[in-house]
Image (cartoon, rainbow, N blue to C red):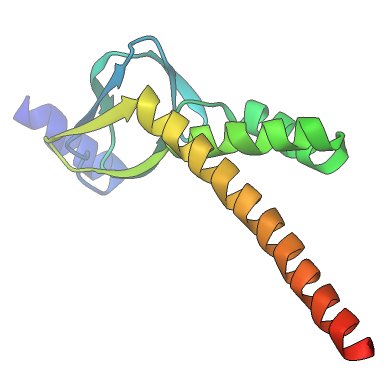
Amino acid sequence: MLGTILTTILIIGQAVPNPGFLSVRSDPPGFPIFVESDSIGTTPISRYQLDPGKYWVTVVSNDSLEALYSQLRTAGIGKKLSALWTLARIDGATSQVEILPGMETAVPIDYQVMQKNATRAKWLFAGTVGGIFGVGLALGLVIGLVAN
């Protein structure tokens, strides 16, 4: 074993990294999981081996994200809003993790957190639109009072 490692070091010129592990649990189970756009299965995932480093872990593929971005650029207002709410849900289930040699990194995914992110986005949108409407109304009243 030691001979193989030393031979590998001589051939490659560096030590073979000690892998780390990624475990992903979700409530409910069954979410597809992607690491840097590569599918690694559905939850629960236990001790998926990765080289040490930082990775993005999410529940959506890059192709699906591109479809959502395309929808934001080209679709009607209803589909654009639907895409925004979906992106907010995805954000609630996306994490950047650091895999350390010989260590297990656990990532929890909670559907309720995903839903709360979408609800928060809807409230922010409604508040922004309402705020703009309110400012416009107040400005109109002030201008109307000054003009009279």
